Amino acid sequence: MKKIFISSDHAGFKLKEDIKSYLSMRNLEFKDLGPSNQDKVDYPDYAHKVAKKVKTNKNSVGILVCGSGTGMNIVANKHKNVRAAQCFNIKSTRLSRLHNDANIITLGSRLLTKKNALNCVGVFLKTKFEGGRHKKRVKKI
Image (tube, rainbow, N blue to C red; front, side, top):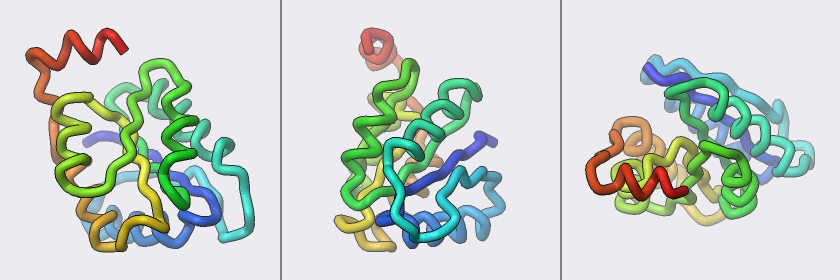
């Protein structure tokens, strides 16, 4: 089983807690890298934490949650060998894994319902990279 690293900012804290419950109910191992409450924090600090863990722990994945999903996505993609995908629905999530071998999903707590976000997390964790013609493209990243 892949190691899962999860983090948020203050805007994504509640959804992060919901995702942690979802993961726990499925007996999936994860590491919460903060924050531990809803006090205001800077999203780049937490996106960097997850991205560093994902790039140094082979076959690990990350889950990042902020208000829009955009800020966390921008930060995570600054790291070598990190392919963060901002996902909005099942299709965007599935394609991020199948075609792009995304290793971090970013979610916007202000843009997604809890149900939609949890469905995206489930698809992200279950979907495997297709390889083939996509492998050479991913290598160009």
